[in-house]
Amino acid sequence: MTWVAAVARLRARREPGVLVTVATVRGHAPRDAGAKLVVGRSATWGSIGGGNVEAVAIDRAREMIAAAKPEPELIDFALNDKVTNQHGVQCCGGTVSVLLEPLPVVRAVAVFGVGHVGLELARILARQDLDLHLVDSRSDLLTEERLGVLADAVAQVHVHHTPLLPEEVLGELPPGTHVLIMTHDHAEDAALCDAALRTSHLGSVGLIGSAAKWARFRKLLTTEGGHDEAAVDRIKTPIGLADITGKEPATIAVSVAADLLRTFEAEGD
Image (cartoon, rainbow, N blue to C red; front, side, top):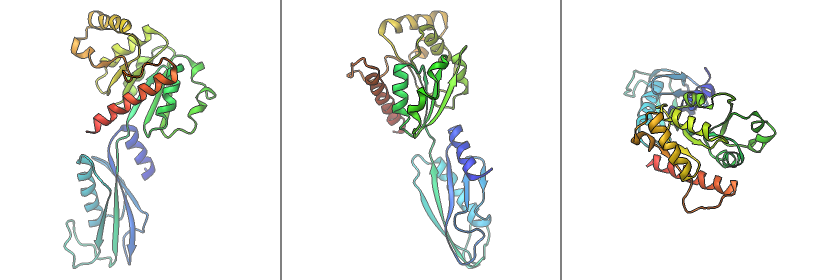
């Protein structure tokens, strides 16, 4: 697997990693500048030449993965037999600088319902570096022409057409995905709320709607769904900032996006 594919795999799985690059070489060294190695929690891909240089880089990369807020680091190695090494002697005769860059876990968001509000929300979230899943049972809302407004997205956009059971997508989402439920059908919303509470690997769950809608849903989730009150309280509703009261789709979308970004900030504390 190439290092590019390895980085993409870690991103898709929402797993942390470190990209290790031979930054500079003077004299003789096992690999030229530009050689790369990707380090995950339990696996590596690629090589920067093996030996002590690679072993030390892997050790340090794993320490960075375990750290709360790792920063990029540059490590210098002298490749001669006079240096005391941690993992054996490398006496190629040159010097090597190795750059270690943390690969952060990219957040994931799933928007169920790409109607007027959902599309406006997608336009905002698409400007963030995250994995954005757009889910809808209506194929006409997921056409290339309609979603063309996301063509310049910074986010990686994944489109899911689910004509029968949108809730099945929940099990396919990456761990920690934040879920926003805003479909055109209250019955679909209710089914998604029920399924989300039964899906243990998700992040936050938000539901758009009125207090009356939520009162009905809460009763359904506790009496028919069998969920206890603590579980039901995982669902945040209404979503958005309370002091933004406009009802235009774009206004609601800005409010919901700001609320979600605040959730992201709280996660990082």
